[in-house]
Length: 393
Image (cartoon, rainbow, N blue to C red; front, side, top):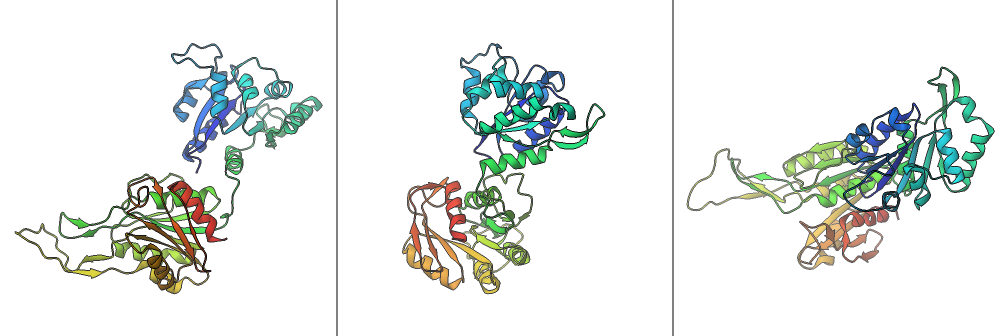
């Protein structure tokens, strides 16, 4: 979901430092790159090694530490950050940020930032409600910072009241909201098929195709990024499935994919058939290795998964793919009609930068309403966004 983003996490010295570890962990699971900058006081609560282990990057706390590579570190950190989160934000660090004081790595980096900033205060109730702290938080909000209000509860000092840092899950949710503002699939469940299927010839050989599964995985990532949930029916793929996509059905043959899709489609709002299932399978099942000067195989037709879904989909949206080597548009329009699909994504696999085994595609999208739109060479991640844009347009 956040695989193309780099997040700077600023950690100041309060007991809520331990919660910042969970923030790093959650961001990493979403695919983000995370740089941690700590104040010296923060290192008294949680060691830099903990953050380094969780982020797989150095945790910066010493402004004057010598580095092998020469760069002005606070500037380089600020330049590559797509978002900054300061959590916990103590009264002290809030005051420094509000007044533009730059006396350590965190405050210096903050002043060089040109990205959105999320601030999660954490302190004693009396400190939190002190007019000076209230004024400082307002100054930061007026400057564009996003303040995640503290919550009420029992504090480390024993007092009960407002001042607890917001929970890591809520802070990360706000980060996703800031970085991924388009949430038009929120509340929608999307079934996506990805990859190739495999039809066994004998005990060692099989029929398959060149589908890598990249398009299906990019679609799944884009749906989650835009607030939706995914059921991923996965054949053979050459790319990893992100850990945040948890509803995954693994299949091998086209028949297994058919059964999985027909079992799951009812719970979904959209079905996207991005997989490349084998159209045929050997008629005879042979367990041992075939031998001989020549082998003759009789193939039979596999189930047409898209057509089966089209016949029962009701109000659900059905997206199908059409990979061809000639007469692309004619084939795409015929497929759109015969499968009772709402949208067909067509591509000529003979074109450079399109089709299998690459990170880009060149697609033409035809819809049930008669509209047809062609796109230039785009990364498959961007093609996924285009497809999602067209589903509810």
